[in-house]
Length: 467
Image (cartoon, rainbow, N blue to C red; front, side, top):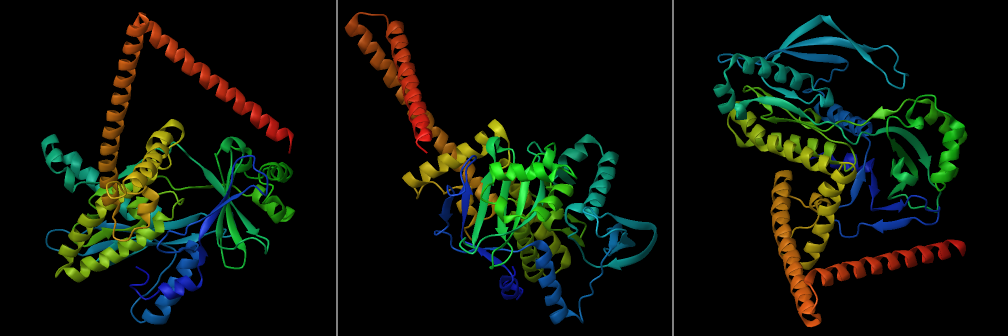
């Protein structure tokens, strides 16, 4: 999308490339990180903070479209009317907002809703992010309409309804940012990652430039002592020295004290809008207003830019605004649903995460390697493929999973039938009941497993004692 609108070169010039990652397992020493380069990716990942992206886009607009685009800041936009059957223009109320203390770690804006000015527009694009002021108004109006209809009307009109699906965050994490300057002997194009013992806190660092300046996140639960404002900087230093010893020397006491003092920030919750993302013939939603995900995989901003490109396609390929709005809604509403559903499955905790993410990842790796023509690669690999939609990924993965489970089910059945036949044969040869032979087999297998674990523990203990 950025290339299409002639701004990619400007964005790339201030971005930092990332060609792989280096991970430290819980308890690993500073020299025990594992480096992995993404040599098979068709494109190089470019990292750019959102505020820097906004700055580049602002400059591009001012340099090229200042006579056609007017930018206004610190306004709250509230829809008054989305148009009716005769007049499809959208009426809006604009309230002035201000931030009393911009230096606060969590600045809050106050909007004067009693003093506002009214404007109308022939086309409204709701791109107000996770605040969803326009989406919330659409949802409220849809609820009012549904309340006036009977059950039959609501059932047959459900595809024309609008709602925001809000998922409960069952793996909630908060974060604090940590500026880091890595040594000259480190690579400046890697994502550095480490986890503390017990997976209490995760340290994720991405480059802010190509000179070794990094922005790191400390991801933790909201109950953690270091997630609180004014936490103990000495305790935080002790924690870093014990768990993140490779990063602790890179952060001075003043910076660490600042990190300890500030409050933690929340990650966005998983939400999507649908099954339509338009209101009437003159309003559409895009970006975080229709799909909000946690920023672990870089899908949020990238998908928002894809929304913009798809909206441009819809406007260019249709003769009326009404048709363009409907076409865009039909194309992107399902994508929003699929994106958020896929992303949430990657974030489930505990056994849910194992079942929804880890096991499918392992199955995809095995089956794609055995039969690449039949089975698609993992979801991560499919993210890198151009032209593959989220709905397409979702459909393909469901088809793969159906075939994989069928193959595994058949394999386990054959193994069970074979084992049963073998037990029956042995019992006949020995003149013993099948139950006795089966019990002896299970006991032998358990004994072998116990001996192997005991030997593994002894070997690990011996290895630690020699360090």
